[in-house]
Image 1 (cartoon, rainbow, N blue to C red):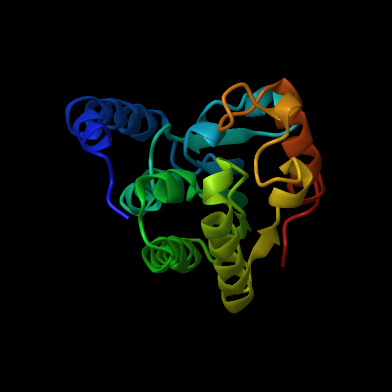
Image 2: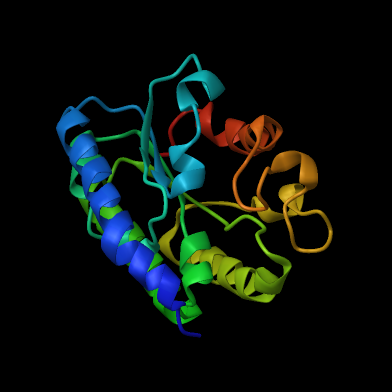
Length: 206
């Protein structure tokens, strides 16, 4: 599946500059050794007010809107430098929308996990499934999520299946959870919080 010309032009002339600015902010803001609970991903992670969602713990937001798994793989150094206790990874929605192959996405995600495990042996890593999006993407998301489950089992990391609780029964986000069929409303973030809380608020693995 090929990406649209509009999408490629948008990325080349606008998104890359924005991504660069956000990455620069993260690099400057990341305090080595500050620890905490880190959330890594795209705009769904980026837009979350983790300080309000989990007010009693130190959260670190490493989300950048619009990014794909291939981008995350190149910007792990600031995350590694803070030495987080736990990392919650959610990526792949933009990869699906861009028409990347399931094999390529899964390979990137496994490479991310492998790099984090090697650099942060004491960190608990949780891989989350891609949330529902457009109905036409349902089968590809389902296939990718199955691959994520296999990666988590193979790598011995946590696996959190977000899809069932957010699905409207037709492969899309429930209406009350989204304002554009992609991003989350407050209710959507509350539903996500309920899925994450048992893992975020428990003692570190190992």
